[in-house]
Image (cartoon, rainbow, N blue to C red):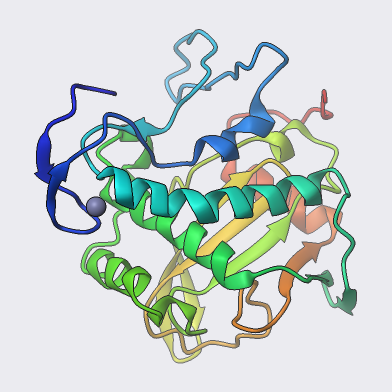
Length: 257
Ligand SMILES: [Zn+2]
């Protein structure tokens, strides 16, 4: 929750700075598609306590200085804008390739800005003290990720790869949710294993591989340097099963909007 600002070490630049009262772990622009005409959204409490609608959520005080927070903001706006264009069909794909489970759809966007944004969110979820993010703890990788975001290391294909998927073709309310990772998924990446963290945004799925040395097949990775964004479209059945696995406690129901 927001508290009075004070001087302390900024968790990103590690400098003693005046920290801001409100830093978003999940950017505010990512929450916008969830809001109604009154600019409010409903938060579903894991313990099913009734909560009043809110205008803002997923923020924390005294973790970042203004400079670091603003620096994240630039790529957040770019990324949210691409997601919004995807949602309302105002960006045209440059191609698609069918595969066994559906297809890959390609978009001509700045993949490194999007990767930087999404990885900065993964890092923020890991450092956050909010209970909503208790399942995301990168351990020793947290510092690697932070340092990788400060340099060009994050642009490497093997550094914390990200898959981007879609649920836009699914007529179920679960495809309209924002859900932060609620468990780590152990994934085989070539000769080794890495933990994966899946995050749902309305119509979009993000899968983070928590590793700085990914050794797996990079074909289906979503965000590679100097390449178009690859959106993983999987068939209805697989996508629905995936959503049911991530959101176990919400019954199937058609989209209401
Ligand atoms: Zn800072």
